[in-house]
Each structure stands twice: as C-alpha cells, then as structure tokens.
Image 1: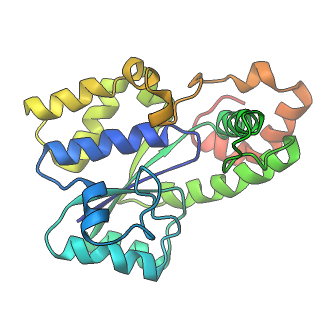
Image 2 (image 1 turned 60 degrees about the horizontal axis):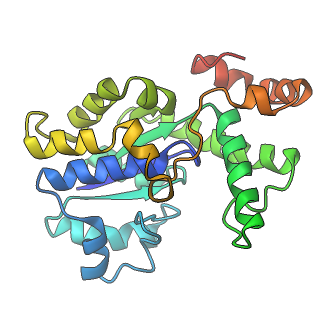
Image 3 (image 1 turned 90 degrees about the vertical axis):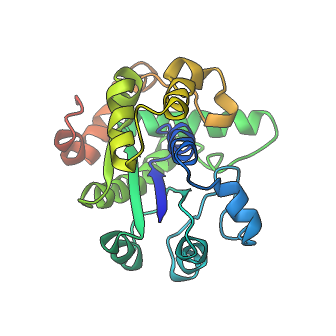
Length: 243
C-alpha cells in the first residue's frame, strides 16, 4: 500500500515524514526515494521527501503502479483529499497520517522561513508571504485542508505540539497505525533517532525551525492576534487551542 504522510506546512511535516518513512522501511517496506528512481517517478514525487503535490488522478495513478506490484512505501503531501484519494483510502490502498499545528504558529513559521530565504538570496515557497495579510490568506487555505483531513476517519491525526511534548505516546500511536513491531530493535532505533532533541539537531533536513508552541503570542501584536482568533475561532475551539 501507499502511506501518505500529509501535513500542514511548518507543522513538523518533514520530521513526521522521515519518522514515518523510516518506520516503514525498518519493517520491510521500500525506500520511497528508491521507488521514485526505479519507476521513473521523478516528475511525480518531487523534492527530497517525495512530495506528490496535488492528489490528482494522474499523480495517484502513477504511484499506484509500484504499490500494486507489491511495494509499500511512504510519500508526502500538503494538499487536501480528492474524491479519488478518499476512494483509495476507503479501499485500503492509501493510508493517510496527518499532522497539524496551531495555524497561528504555522503561519508565523512560514513567514519567518520565507523572509530568511529572501535575505539569503534564495527565495522559497514561503517568500511571497511579505506581510500579515498575505500570510493570513496563505494559512486560511491550509486550515480548510486541515478540516478536510480531520474529517477523514481513516486517517491518523497527530497534533504537532503533542509530538514535541509527548513524543513516545505519539510515536506509539504512529507505530500502531502502521502496524509495525514496536519491539523490533530496528523500529526502536528509528523512534530514538527522531526524538525532538535529535530532530532539532538536523533542522535543514527535517524542516525544523523554532518549534516553539505559542511563539505567535510574542511576535504578533494584540490586534493581529485578535484578527486570527476571529478568523479561526471554530477551528481553534474544535482542537482545544487556547485563543
């Protein structure tokens, strides 16, 4: 089958993907980067973490080929579920694990990351977030995507803040979801490798920035925080984030 590691941007999605990927390979699954190479999927699974982008018919059909040939592997996405993706999920061919974060912190992290890239002369996917308004519009789209994944009963839902503060509990939930052997020395080695203190030591590879919950409270004005409460109040209340 295909394991889809999907997440809100700047919610530890690179960290989560690598943890998921390595748990699967430690349990006999295939390395997704090797699958990409073997099946010539470089235009479908991009970047270092095999990001499929939008879950379209063309892209999903391409990655189904190695899966139907008996390979289990992990791919990444930030996009929302499509009707085809939901059908594949219900049929058991696609298993989604979704990680989310307080959208106010995710938005701040995206803005900071994009501005730092601009300062270095290497614009990235977040560099168009030049002010508060564009950043709000950006994260609004991903809140809608988050709501769609949270409505998917077959998906594993992981709170980024819990993965940081209660790593062992969340790692066990992921292990159970993936049906891998928690007692395997190889699995335990992967869990230890991606503990938060280890993930922080490799920020570039795992997309780890500050990783601090509630940082927006110090970096945003009271007026900006109020705007975000008004825009995201139902979402924040549903997920028990403090206003």
